Image (spheres, rainbow, N blue to C red):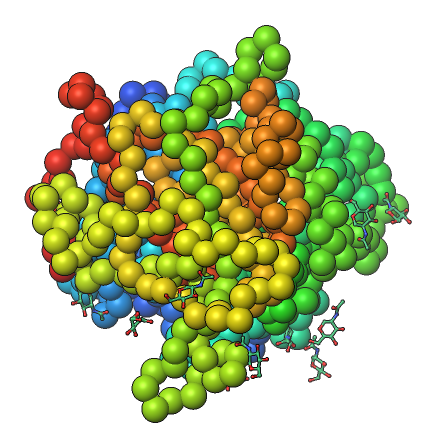
Length: 574
Ligand SMILES: *[C@@H]1O[C@H](CO)[C@@H](O)[C@H](O)[C@H]1NC(C)=O
Ligand SMILES: *[C@@H]1O[C@H](CO)[C@@H](O)[C@H](O)[C@H]1NC(C)=O
Ligand SMILES: *[C@@H]1O[C@H](CO)[C@@H](O)[C@H](O)[C@H]1NC(C)=O
Ligand SMILES: *[C@@H]1O[C@H](CO)[C@@H](O)[C@H](O)[C@H]1NC(C)=O
Ligand SMILES: *[C@@H]1O[C@H](CO)[C@@H](O)[C@H](O)[C@H]1NC(C)=O
Ligand SMILES: *[C@@H]1O[C@H](CO)[C@@H](O)[C@H](O)[C@H]1NC(C)=O
Ligand SMILES: *[C@@H]1O[C@H](CO)[C@@H](O)[C@H](O)[C@H]1NC(C)=O
Ligand SMILES: *[C@@H]1O[C@H](CO)[C@@H](O)[C@H](O)[C@H]1NC(C)=O
Ligand SMILES: *[C@@H]1O[C@H](CO)[C@@H](O)[C@H](O)[C@H]1NC(C)=O
Ligand SMILES: *[C@@H]1O[C@H](CO)[C@@H](O)[C@H](O)[C@H]1NC(C)=O
Ligand SMILES: [Cu+2]
């Protein structure tokens, strides 16, 4: 079961080749997998333009990291570029190894030009598709790749073994935003891409199209990753239904659907059964955004091609190998929130009434976080491009997070938090208002580096409530260091009397990133059993940059195996 994709794009005078290999060699159990990431510049040509981008080892998308559950990983990152860099292993639990998590100024200082850092951690209790990406500034626009975790040797998938496995990464053609200098919204992307290719619907990229050649009547496992900076995407394949079997590296009860939604930062595995026989047909696989709120999006569609072919020498000579023009999928309309709601409701864990999920049944601490867009003062003597000349801001409980200049985890571990962070993050909004109704007149945020402290093993319930202060919008919230269970969601304001009656405490989906519904709420539960400092943020980079982020401190437990390990000597310093 080799999953290989190889492609050559000819655009203008540039030739850019990338090869991403997965599964070579197949990792065995109980070993350490070693990788070396050389961060360097590479010229690429896309949509008739050439640019120099930051890459891992000249590859875009970056190399496929493939491990087996239980393996240790050791990735040496060497920085050859002027930009500071860190790498985040998105969705990896990092049990007691928070130093390897990667968000800049949260768990580590950046790796500066000429420096290196070895990320060392073990994959425990997780299997499926995740990804890795840069976690500083907006560098993850080009620095990312798949992270594939195979089950332990001899442990089968809970679905029929697929014929082949193929990683498919959805992204946007890199936008380098000026938003942070103007205080306005980010530029919309030029195009979306599938495995780095914009495809035939854009000018200048007809030849730059991802093609997946499949055999008839086989089952393929597509490992879908949304690596886009600022977009939630619908994905579908013409004339095919997809069977969803996994989300965020956790198996789910299989269900069929014509399209899936992937929020930025989410991963989903689907089974694709190819058409049983002739004719040699091709089908578009396509993605386009799910649009909420007033932000400007590029509503264009990216497409790749699924070619269903018998091998040429098994074709009767009378049949031409040339394809007819491909069929197009019916993707949900751009703002089809009812599709999104339906899709979210179909995602269920494998648990049953007789063997319920390990979701906390009792809650020790409950929190209510409002999440949304607001405003802040423009810089002195300047007019910003936010509403009424303000600067766009985003906040959790009205606190727009200020990134410190030293790493929070170091400050915590070495008892040097003074002047770095405070632990007074509000447990609930200070001002209660009709969150999804008429907003308050004052749309300004508060700011600060505020954290929330959780004793080891706390059962946490967190209600995340979207606000309509600058227009309701769906925010994909990502929690580092944990998976959480999604026990309830709905529209309007969360009702603490009524809504808990409908919580799903039997087979809730378990994931690391979840979309807070536009103009609605979502409730998650997790057990704080991983000591460290854990970032939680909107995975839309624009919103993250505006401050839609915070961090938790989870304290050590009493037992030796409940304590954060000390950092290695090569941990970068600020
Ligand atoms: C963003 O868009 C503005 C207006 O179209 C344009 O002037 C600017 O060059 C764009 N910035 C980038 C980095 O593409
Ligand atoms: C969306 O992308 C297309 C194709 O690259 C481009 O022509 C168009 O200008 C973009 N739309 C916006 C609103 O920028
Ligand atoms: C492609 O280019 C042609 C001619 O330059 C232009 O008319 C057309 O609008 C462009 N299409 C897209 C999708 O940008
Ligand atoms: C694909 O679906 C279209 C309608 O959406 C239909 O006309 C066409 O025959 C289908 N083709 C195949 C090969 O199933
Ligand atoms: C897509 O965007 C263009 C302008 O960027 C707009 O004219 C068109 O109506 C939009 N299409 C949809 C379906 O929203
Ligand atoms: C929106 O999604 C719903 C539920 O999947 C579907 O019934 C409806 O046809 C969709 N509408 C549009 C315009 O896509
Ligand atoms: C902008 O100013 C107008 C007029 O003063 C006011 O009605 C509106 O609420 C303001 N918007 C924001 C986001 O502050
Ligand atoms: C947010 O904080 C600012 C600054 O303290 C305050 O003026 C504003 O009223 C607060 N807004 C809400 C909704 O709490
Ligand atoms: C944070 O708030 C303080 C006090 O209101 C203000 O002076 C400062 O400019 C704010 N910082 C940012 C980055 O908005
Ligand atoms: C890189 O990080 C160091 C340490 O935080 C900082 O002093 C320096 O200004 C950063 N350099 C760049 C180019 O951002
Ligand atoms: Cu957001």
